[in-house]
Length: 135
Image 1 (cartoon, one colour):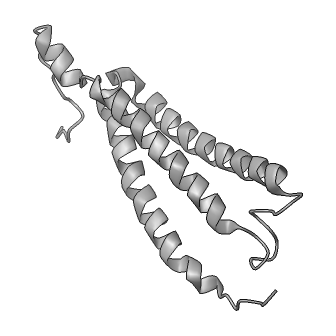
Image 2: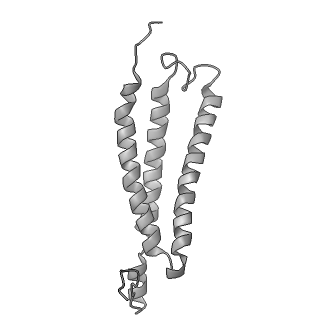
Image 3: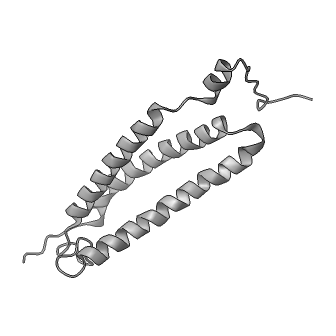
């Protein structure tokens, strides 16, 4: 088997794209939690936001462990030597899981009604007092 010279710098575009995507996702998710939670639970919603981040990292570690255990004996997807692994199969698995995640999100988001609209339908006017105040 021929050795293919690879550099770690081939990962820079992937890390850049994933990092930028996570930054936009985190901002939107935190804004959603702060906008949609009840007034007295804003701190709790920030804690929930950080908990979802940690759970995501935890499930990511579980996924890597499961893939390594399932494929580790024959032809490992995640080998110590990149020339012997099948990393492309792992990335295909991630792509499939991302598409499934998108479909579940679209299904869930389709039926969601924002707090402002729910309250407006009930005749309640939402009053924001989170803005800057001068004393």
